[in-house]
Length: 487
Image 1 (cartoon, one colour):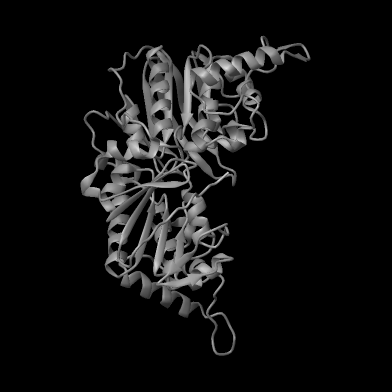
Image 2: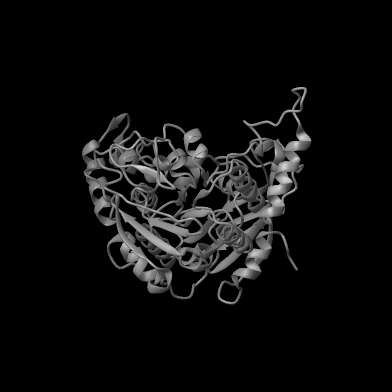
């Protein structure tokens, strides 16, 4: 199967090129070739007219190509300067590590590009937006002339996005060529000088931002018209279904990730939790779903306390769970579509009788759900690992929504999937709300939280620091709360 099919791409010094495409369109493969991680079967890579033979990232770095990955490659317990010069440690004349020279280098780059980073700060103490600047300094310290940013705004608040765009513009004005990979159409239209769209391994369009709309870009990416607006009526909220009181939860390092959180979610409403990733949202959801024990406080569903209940007990109460990491927590990727469709009910009728599985019934259910939830798969016997991210997510949504539910807990429900699948999953979530379920959405994408939610709660450093009406509150106000600036 061709991941890239006769793809051509160019970026000039001082130009910002946005690269758009669905999951599976070939963007990542193309960038891995450019960064020396993959070798192309045909074609060539040229920098400043010179043919490159890239066999490793070291070759790409030597050619002036740098990449800032979506998931930062930083050592939390190291300082900024230690992270930057890791692998190219400056030495004093007598061979000792010269930390002052490292700090001086970081400070010079920081000042030149107005990055405002303290070289001596511990990375684990820095906000996400500042950690991203550290990654940029790492790339610049290796004299990169062409920078690739992979989904650079996926974990940033609106204020941090504005600051990031300022930095990118400064890099462009300094003559750096920028490739900006994103699924956020608004941002591509705002930041890019030129936009290239990939679909099915090919480049299908090259457009200028002032000559195209969001809707047109979405259609180019997916191959069909896409409704970018979440269509929903005003909520008809009923009685509380999920009640969380004074919840305290520890993270994997035994630090208090959730610090005395209290809130309710009522039937017939969508409550959204906004916040920069890493502020306790993961631990909160895991505690609600019985995956992680709490240190104090209570969780009740439908009037019954479930603080110490098992995930299976909570599932049996009519709770649907869409986990934040679909491959680690939502699927067994080496299992087939059928096997994944029945993961939460294989142990009971109609899929089993005692120790005997009824695979005929499982296949009938899988075929029905594949059709009903528009899962694009060659067959129900296909391994889930071979499906695109959007179709993997649809398998989870189909499995979890295929019954009467009183509560939906969806964490990062559209992370890393294409605009067509986002449109579909949003519609299904609203449908469950309209059927009377209580819905809790947790997302680091503020636009998603604003579009879906009837109420927005903001989480910062393990606490709920604000509640907003998305119809009257703006992204600036909520973004400030995400940064901890509450009034």
